[in-house]
Length: 136
Image (cartoon, rainbow, N blue to C red; front, side):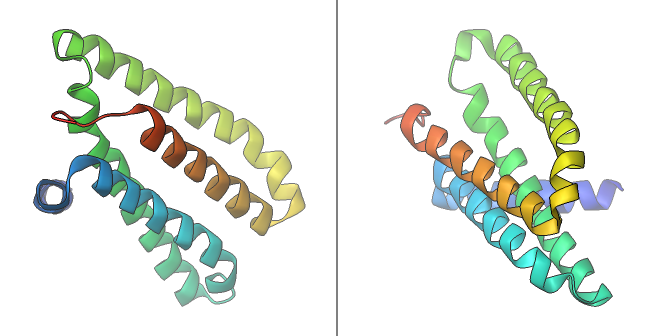
């Protein structure tokens, strides 16, 4: 578990420092969207589904971990409050996703993946419109 965590954090730190925080998050979101939309096609076989879910996990987690340094620099004087608000927002998203997942699943896997990709694109739009990186 610890080696997985170190690898993930190392990947994020290495890439995020090179390409910038906002670009890094945007890339993770776009990769996540692509993976989500490919998942119904990949899911026709067990191996494809496992590869697709692994790619989805990596891209989603990359976005989340990349967002931490950008989020904490938005209001430097209230970092702890901002982190708590961010975690609360992520938790609320999990709850709403769990509630919406059942009815969406009744419509099929593709409905779930399209809805998730649309929400990811909404997050990308909010990132581009409202979140500034230090020095911008």
